[in-house]
Length: 109
Image 1 (cartoon, rainbow, N blue to C red):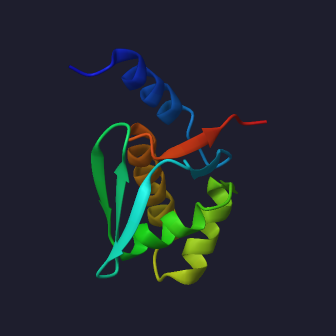
Image 2 (spheres, rainbow, N blue to C red):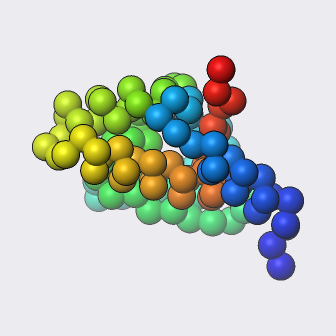
C-alpha cells in the first residue's frame, strides 16, 4: 500500500512545475551510468528509474539548481529539435522525476 501523503506531496509538487520553476536533483538517489544511460535508484522508495542519453544529460544538468526555462534553452541549443517540443518533453520528464521523488522543485519567487 502506498503512503498517501507521499503520493499527494509528489502530485502537488508536479502541479507547480513550470518554466519559471527551479529544479535540482535530490541528494538521495543513487545514479549509475550503464551503456550511455543513467539508472537511478531511490533507496528509501526502492524504485529504479532508467534515463536515455538525453535524459542522462538532463540529470547531469540538475546537479545544481536550474530554472526550467534556462534548462530548456540550453537543451535547444545542444540538440536539434523544435524548442516547444523540447520544453514539453523536459516538463514531462521533470514531472516524472518529481513524482518519483528524484528531484526537488523549489518554490517560485
